[in-house]
Length: 81
Image 1 (cartoon, rainbow, N blue to C red):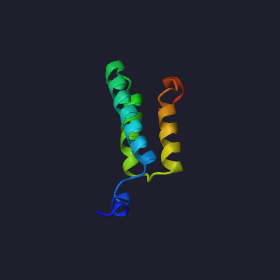
Image 2 (image 1 turned 45 degrees about the horizontal axis):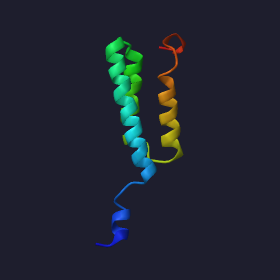
Image 3 (image 1 turned 45 degrees about the vertical axis):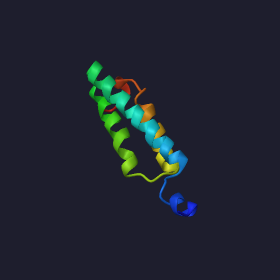
Image 4 (image 1 turned 90 degrees about the vertical axis):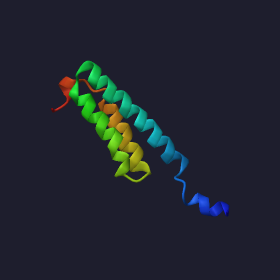
């Protein structure tokens, strides 16, 4: 099999790293939300887990993931919901 044929099938290493990283953050956020009964962290965790399916890799992918992860650390009283 030609090595060039497999290169087009596999995503970039940075994309794989992002998928793994944000999946772990999502699982931790959802678990924390269930433990502390804080629904805002659960919603953010679900969004972090779902958005990689709709956003292609690149700067927007990483920027959105970092912003959503940062929202987990914002106190609930500062969020609009």
